[in-house]
Image 1 (cartoon, rainbow, N blue to C red):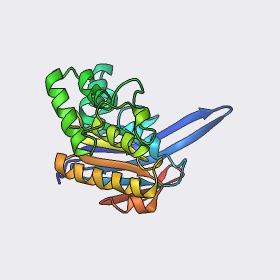
Image 2 (image 1 turned 90 degrees about the horizontal axis):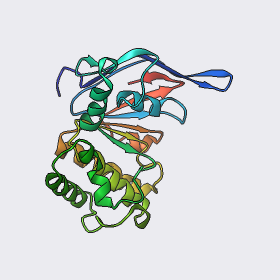
Image 3 (image 1 turned 135 degrees about the vertical axis):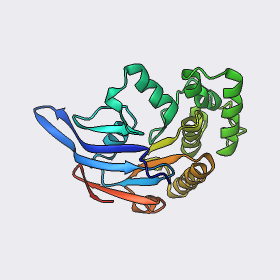
Image 4 (image 1 turned 180 degrees about the vertical axis):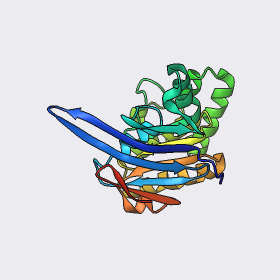
Length: 227
């Protein structure tokens, strides 16, 4: 593991306007993520886990503080640079899968590479390889509605990895799955993290799921209390 953080969160605060009141979601949060880490962000619903992941992935911006990737603050990026950072450096795995229903599993996996304008032939090969790796090599022509929840999440994982990101951000990836399927997804993420030499940050409310991580960071009321 490198001594230089892959991603640094420094004194970050984030609030949202909810009707007549201001909801403080994150308060003075600081943490470092290193290359090769498997970090669990744990806490009850509403503690700021998803917001923190979105900030780390450049999907949102903090009200105060900075997010740095390899020492460079994300807010200094142009919109184009930030889009390339999200596309090339980050792989997102969401609880709700976010697969496009009109596309096949193979086409969904190919999407990030198409956005990055990677050669079509290479993308297809890579996508088929990943579908094989997640156990869906024979399901590439199926659309999301024809797949189980666990299969859809496996497609989402393959999609997150198709551009060989250095950081995978998973937001409650087992939240919509039964315990057995959820465990299979966690084991798959652990194996792929090692094989692809990726860094994994996973938000979860489940203590058992968090127990698979190398390091657990506990959030409560928008603040880090342990980790």
